[in-house]
Image (cartoon, rainbow, N blue to C red):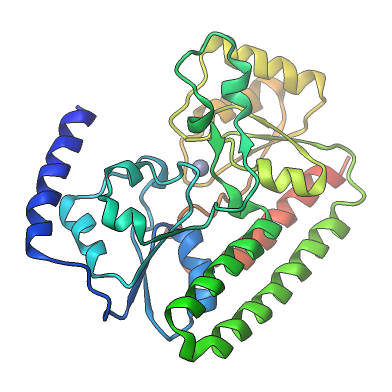
Length: 302
Ligand SMILES: [Zn+2]
């Protein structure tokens, strides 16, 4: 079915592209997803209109844009994406769009999914498909990503170089302060393990010496089998895990089942992949600050 849809998208794109050409005088910068949007907006400010390609409320990992939506990318001055396979639709983008994209994972050291590495017999997983794409959940990476954005903005709009660089420095300072706060507040933790549902927090864990045990894989669709679930439950028990982190927006049946069978608490961490009704007034900094409070409560209390 997916192949058929992709075929029609490609046909549709072909028809659209005969009608439009690359527009370099436009005022619009398109960011693929919320994390790309938030970081871009911090640098670009009001110099361009920044829009978000995958709407909030949609699951970015398996979003399938319409041909019309892809066609509209031709009218953008710049398209900014996360990369590392986060935007699954990237393969269906035409070369002209891919070539003008700024890919924020460029220059970031990849981490790989524990899930696919643990599955010895899973021949479907290749390294290129199992890179963990949730790079922005490392504050240090987020600073690097803003650095890529500022360099690109200076390149395409040199007249406003000082404005972009000033925005970068102000935000870098905010992000560095948050990174220090994480380090300080997690210092007195009783354990290094965090149990999560969606395997999204590897980059965050690496920054602070934590280790993630995830029930599902790097997309929310990778559900565990019954035997995997049993194995993970044993692992949580042997590591004396007291809290399991889910997300407010996801289906919680697996984490509920595990939490009740082990009699442990449930808490939540936000992947910051997309905003929803509850988080529409939040941003990267406020969501990462809430995440720190949840981590501190789970890891530092006995
Ligand atoms: Zn994700």
